[in-house]
Length: 287
Ligand SMILES: C[S@@+](CC[C@H](N)C(=O)[O-])C[C@H]1O[C@@H](n2cnc3c(N)ncnc32)[C@H](O)[C@@H]1O
View 1 (cartoon, rainbow, N blue to C red):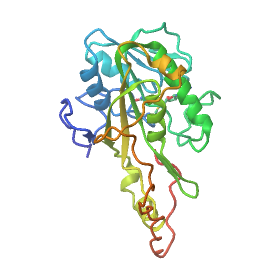
View 2: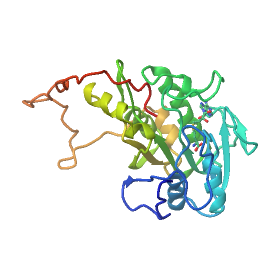
View 3: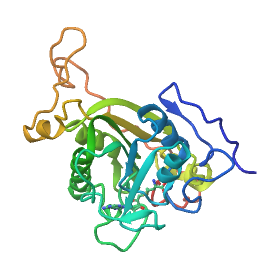
């Protein structure tokens, strides 16, 4: 039975749950495309942060979900990808978009999250860079610089991303790392958690592996929302190397370093759950 389609409404909270990939009787993007973005997410962002006629840019257009949603609600849109899936999408590297400065009213990005999916043979594909090393973050920072260049001041961007856990190698908090990079150029607006509905999350062998191996399956994606300052100061802030200082909300002083002054250190890793019988097959990726 196909998943029940939730109504297409603006989400009031920071927890979104879409059991269906597509709204309405049509499809947006391509349901067969591995890693397509649920169209409800893009619809919600465009409703909140754009108006009719605004120009929406997707530097990682994939199967074209952003283009279809934009068309549905009378926004103009341009999609770029190293491996275009249709003639509506232009072949370009997200780090070097063929677009003039300050043209975009909104940028949506659902980039590769490490190496879980093989998107194309193009050596520039960011999906070939492992999030365990610095090259992935360097590449994404170059994308963010390009987004800063094309985005108009006082406009928004959305980044849809997931952390990664790889058995034997550990946890990679990609969401936090990319949040920190974006914050050097843009102003944080909010963070939404979007429930993941990947089939593997319901599969017995994956669930058993998570229990016996004492790790977690990825239950949500981050949707990071940022805006570009009205004075367009993003690039200047980055050049000057100024990152905003986080202050204590009560007394305005910088927050205490974790573990400082008599604080009990956090306990180390929890004990391993006891093994049970046959070892389940271990999932490779998490996407
Ligand atoms: C998660 S998919 C995007 C899915 C898309 N939002 C959709 O709904 O179909 C990531 C895309 O990024 C593309 N990509 C990877 N590296 C890229 C780069 N350097 N420049 C442009 N596109 C890139 C891949 O080819 C892939 O299509």
